[in-house]
Structures are given as structure tokens and as C-alpha cells.
Image (cartoon, rainbow, N blue to C red; front, side, top):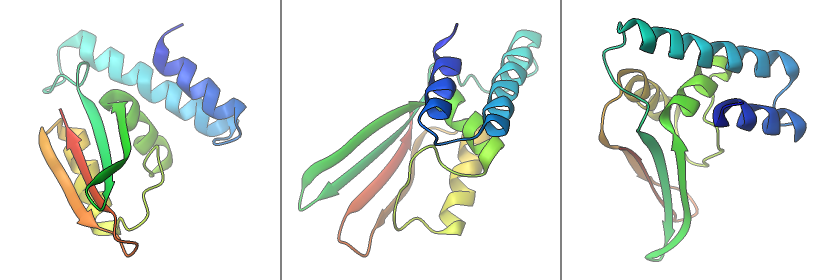
Length: 124
């Protein structure tokens, strides 16, 4: 069983998603793989990650890296990020979705939360 499906099953087990969402995620992953095998996909998401860094007072509080294909499947199925980031606005989320869909690279978002955390999201 591949790592992406194991992660989906773990989210299901933890109650973070329901069985319908898990099924949609698995279908999205299978669709991604089918597109990759046909050569139609324009960007290679296989080796890219969505990196989320959260700093407060110059110190790293969160340093998270999620395979981009997994983040994309979750966002397609649920419309949400696979992690909760306080302070992200709907406009920012739309920019992030577009960047994930196109496989853009580099810093996609950076903002400061009301709590004083600096958040950056990078695809690479």
C-alpha cells in the first residue's frame, strides 16, 4: 500500500475525515496517478512538497512538509488544507490552491497572524 493511502487511512482512523472524504481522497490520488501515467500532466508533483513554516520571535514553532500530491488530493476532496493554519484568508487559500494545481515553485504565501506568528508556505 502506498504512503499516501496509508496517510488517508490514518486520518480516517483519527476521525479527522469521514469515510466519504477518504474515498474521495483515494480516488483523487488514483486519478493523479492515471494522469501521470498517460503523460498528460504538465507539472511533475511527485517530488515536490508543500512546506509550512511558522515562526514567532524569530524561533521556528512549526516546520511541516507535506507531499504536494497528497496536499492536492486533500484540497480537491475537502476544499481545505491538510493542516489548520490560523490567519489564512480565503483569498490566500485560493492562491495556494492555484499554486498547488499548477505545481508552481517557491514561496507561495507569507503572512503574519493576529497572534504575531510569521507563516510562510513554500512549494519545492
